[in-house]
Amino acid sequence: MVNPVAKLESVIYQKLQSRLYHPKSTQQQLKLKEKAQRQESNSLSNLKASLRKREVIEKLHNIGYFENDS
Image 1: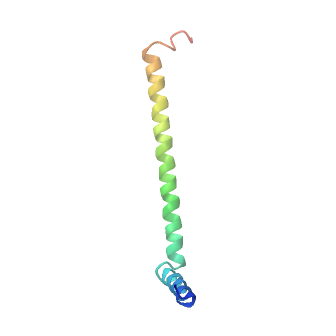
Image 2: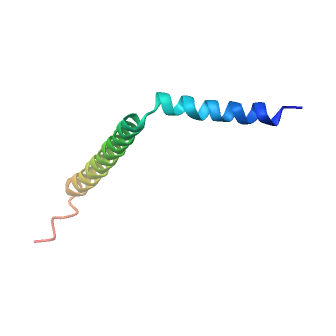
Image 3: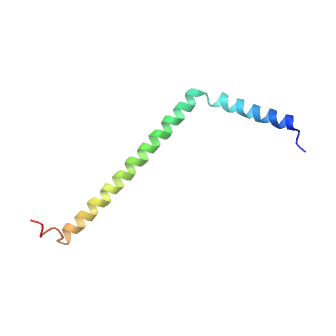
């Protein structure tokens, strides 16, 4: 059976270690990096959607769909 005091010490040690390796400034940098990745992903998704719409419109033009819209 695991000694509860040893387990608690282990948890406290791990939390202290994580704080040492991820101080507040590092956490802020990680948040900014994640935000930038989300923005990049959104931009890429928007670009792909725009290109798909453009392709659809181009195909409709090619088959003469808009010729009667004068």
